[in-house]
Length: 56
Image (cartoon, rainbow, N blue to C red; front, top):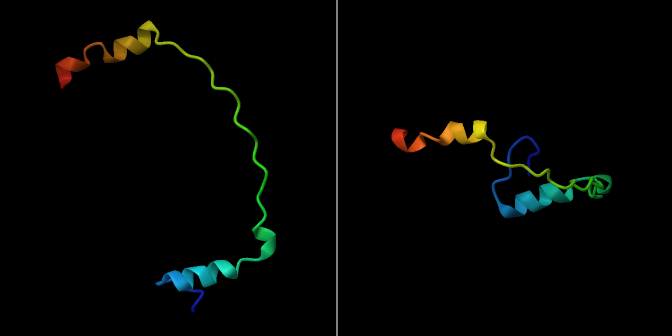
């Protein structure tokens, strides 16, 4: 196995992953996403697609 080339077989890929230090195996806590903001279609948004059928 060479560390300068991409693995060519599944066995080489597994061996490469086995070489990753255990300190990098720990999961990093991630922030939970907040609630999505509500939105509504306003006149400007509607105007962008109002004539879309003419272009198709």
